[in-house]
Length: 214
Image (cartoon, rainbow, N blue to C red; front, side, top):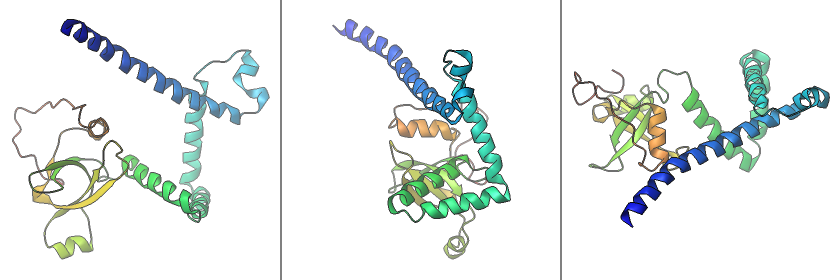
């Protein structure tokens, strides 16, 4: 029975990831294909070609995102986005959801040299316990001045939902910078620590790693 169970688990480990990957990709592609509804009926691919080609919506989605980005980056676009966000800010429930998602997206996709560029290991929530965190800033203005020592602002995400979490101010000397990438750390957090990235340690390196801004 142990042999049968081992082979059964091995088969599950092969097929379940494939099935989930296929399902998610099919869902995302199907969702993107709905952007074709933005086109007039006579210009839709299935009307021109006579049959449907899955995935054409991906191309249109990329084009829409690029055009939106170009428009939002100029003066008129920024004014429009500002007015739109001002309107959403007046709607109680929508305001909370939109601002939370927007702030998280800005942190993850920001081109800032500090935002979410490092994965850190800090002692949290108490001495002797460690948590994964993301560096958000090392320039903390009044907080830095009043503390009297070099500090780092860290975002400690919750699991399995990394869009929520806590802001923790940590002395720079107590921060350990990890080699893992941000996406690897997110996978580890979402999987409850089951998916652990491989550590390719530099044989010439020494522990502890340099502080957050070195």
